Length: 412
Image (cartoon, rainbow, N blue to C red; front, side, top):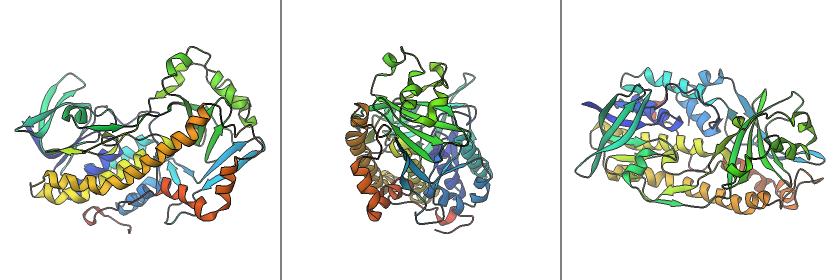
C-alpha cells in the first residue's frame, strides 16, 4: 500500500505550484500526471504578472527569464483605418507590466525541476487517477492506472484535484456544480506571423468572424469564436473560409488566406463556465478548473488556478504537517478564493452577453469600420476607467504571495 501526506492529481500549473510549495514546507507530497511529459500544444500559455511575482518570490525569476517568451504589453483593435490601441499593460503597478507568453511545457519543466530538489516531493508521470478511495465517508486516496496497464492505490491524508474542468475526481465525489450557458466555442490554430505585423494581442471582429490573435514571435496563436455547438456542421465547409472571412477586412492578413490547409490544424475548445457550490468533501479539495471552469475570455484561468494553489499551500501546510487537516481547513481555502472567482466569472458572463453574443450574430463589425465603436472610444478617453480592465485581467483580485516557508528570494 502506497502512502503520502498530500496527493495532488494533475501536473498542470496549479498542481505543480501546490506540490512545490508544500514540499518546501516539508510536507510529503506526491503529484500524479497522466501524460508521459508536459509537451502538449494548444494549452494556455499566459503567465500573468501575479505569477511572475510569485516566481520571483520562489527564487525562480532568473531561470524563468531564460525561457523563450513573448511579452504581451498591449491590445490593439483592427479597424478599417488601421490598428487602434484598446488597452495597455505598461501602466500596471509592480515590476512586471506585461503578460508573458511562454510555452506551458517550459514553465512546468521549470517547476518540476525545482520541486524535485525537495526531498519530500515525488512526481509520477504516466499515472492517471481513475477513482477515489473511501473509508467511512472520507476520501482516503485514489486508485490509479499507468500507461503500461499497471494499477494500484495511493492513500493520502488529503487528495487535491487539480485535474481540470473534466475532473474525474470531482465527478467521483458527486460535488454539486452550478453552470452558466456560454454563447461560443473556440477554434485554436497557428498562423504564420511576419516581422511587419503588429505586436501584442489583436482582436479581429468582422461581420462574419470574431477572433483574437496572440503574438508568439514567429507565429500567431489564434482563437476564433464560433457559435456554441456549431463545430461539426462548420467543418463540412472549406477550412480556408476561416482566414478569408478575416482577411476580407484586415489587409495585413491577406497574404495568409491559404495558411490553413486541413481541418486537423484547427483544435476545438468546448467552452464551459461553472463553479462547484462546495469545493471539498472530507479528505478531498478541488482547485483551479476542477473547482471553477473558466471561459477563455481574458485568458485568466491559469492565473486563478495558480492563485488557488498558493492559498491552499499557505492555509493547509501546517494542518498537513500535524496530520490534522479537516474540512474546516478546506473551507478556509474556498472562502479565500471565492471572491476573485465569483467576480471574474461575473465579468466573463457580462462579456459573453454584451460583446461576444452580438459579435457572433454579426452585430459588430469593428474591422470593417473606420473607427472603434463609440463605447470603446469613450472608454479609451477616461484614464481611470481605461485602467480597470488591464488591472483585473493582469493582476486580478486578492493576489496571493508565496508563504515565508517557500521563499528563496524576492519580496511581496
